[in-house]
Amino acid sequence: MTTGVLGTGAVGRTIAAKLAELGHDVVMGTRVPAETLRRVVKEDGAGSQLDAWLAKRTRIKLGTFAEAATHGDLVWNATSGGKSLAVLGASRAASVGPRILVDVANPLDFSRGMPPTLLVKDTDSLGEQIQREYPSLRVVKALNTMNAAVMTDPSSVAGGAHTAFMCGNDAEAKAEVRAVLESFGWRDVIDLGDITASRGMEMILPIWLRLFGILKTPSFNFHIAR
Ligand SMILES: NC(=O)c1ccc[n+]([C@@H]2O[C@H](COP(=O)([O-])OP(=O)(O)OC[C@H]3O[C@@H](n4cnc5c(N)ncnc54)[C@H](OP(=O)(O)O)[C@@H]3O)[C@@H](O)[C@H]2O)c1
Image (tube, protein in one colour):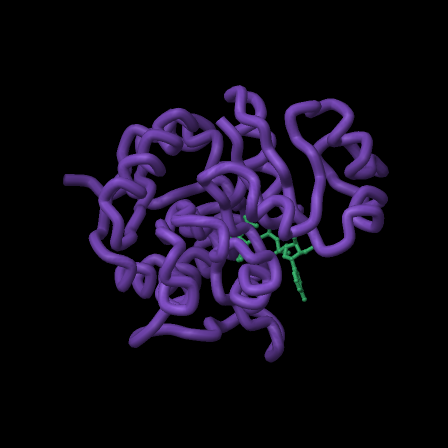
């Protein structure tokens, strides 16, 4: 399977690495590949650059946002939430057929310092904005409610006994994304319905950030007991 990942931050790298480990061929997108290759990443030890990180993960190629957005039928949005709409527009993701876009981004606004606020909330969400602006994309919001490391390694928290949410307008797209999440190890995936559920998924961020401050670790998640 071929997959595009828009974003080279902790989320983009974590998802790309997991997909590659599962046998997908991945193009990870960035603004200027030659510059991003020299960026230091922390997974492989202090001082390691992205080109060395990629050399150990040969199924992942670094490309432009446009190259990643047009690679495969399933594309992940792991870009800074305030820039996601612009990245998707510039990358022509929506002009190449009815792709599934898994939106992991949060519309965080750091302009007033920490903690960040949300750029959109209550009556709208980034997930809905993407779906509205690019109607040919089949947007599925998923995995934005937890730390990057937990996204692809649910067993790292409470043996995996916790919950991933998803939402979107297209039932087939959600079924495909659910299968990918299950391949990551997720056992409890709750479908919250149509893309308007992105509001609640994105508004989890303030409580997530507060918990992070109190627990002093990002290695936790929400478990919906029933
Ligand atoms: N970190 C987490 O644990 C976590 C958890 C849940 C959800 N999220 C959400 O997932 C997304 C990715 O998070 P992240 O922590 O991996 O990294 P991030 O720093 O939020 O985003 C990194 C990506 O955004 C792109 N970007 C930043 N500014 C840009 C601009 N002005 N124009 C175009 N692209 C721009 C970067 O492009 P370049 O590659 O060109 O630099 C990079 O690929 C965010 O929306 C975040 O809120 C993060």
